[in-house]
Length: 431
Image (tube, rainbow, N blue to C red; front, side):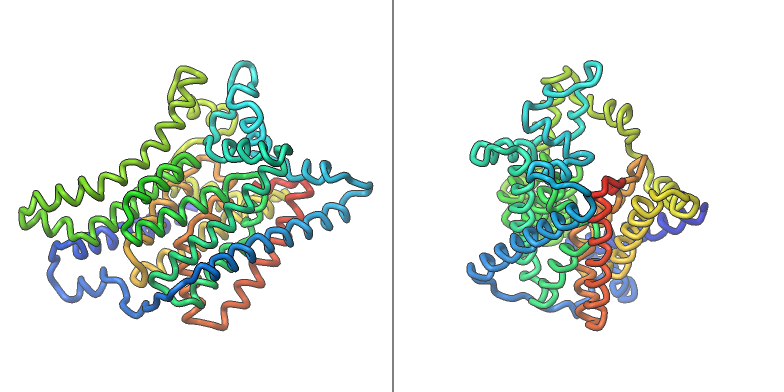
């Protein structure tokens, strides 16, 4: 097991060094040496870009909603087969209320003070934007659970549209379609259709990455702040924003040439908007303070009730692989095999795509992995990795270069999703 943290550390920190050197080079610092430049420069064979019409996006949105509806209908059939008695629509919705979904429902119903255990408002560990949207939707739909599921569907469909627009900037149409198919068929993408906030994070992340790539810094700040109000991982979008800002405007080169005024103007007019992302986190911390008088109370609740915290990703991976090998209960298949497969997929995508994709995507994937794979009790890694957008972009590019893999990947993912969707409704630990 000692090899796990060593191998993972070499891969991740090696990628960090390459990205840092590339950022220096692309932002105007000459490193010298053609050999070094070959190592750090992104592959120029990645060519693409295509136009998107409004009808294309409407069609994609409709297809995404139809996909979620089909999955929902299949789930109803699965539930009826597994249950031995007739069920009402409310009973079916109740089957969707598993794990964290119950806590989002509680926040949507009455805020953070609605539910407590011995005076501890433990729902404070969940960020507020998703339950606020559910509460807003329930004004029109009256049923809080229907509202939560529909909000997830709408956000997932919107995320597909933003992801398609993002891919249209640098990739061809075939790769863009593959990306959406892969991220939708990923086994734990089942959570995009449940009362969980994966769809929200996916939407805000895709939108923010799109505006970063288009250099629309005002919208980067706005959507980045909303991403940070969705989940702590949303704040990580500041990294690709900063990388793109540095490279696109050649900031380090201007500093080297002592063009201080030009750099200040670029920071004041464009780069400063990146800091708006902190507003999302600030609102969440204020919620903690308003309820408990402590901005960071959620850390205590995460440790006390979820045995959760942040640790070095190598240590967390060791825990994951240990249970993957030694666990004999059904949780080996429900939790640890998906976790190991998911993190392995993301690391493999990172290594494969390191020289083939823009620095902003690689930098984001690195920090996303370090933070999400650094959970002290890594039982939800497969679910976390559903929002590792650059990994699916890289997988789609790989499939575009090796077309025979498309059906293998799609069918394999879809079958696995069916298995885990069924297990989820059987109330197994699909987290």
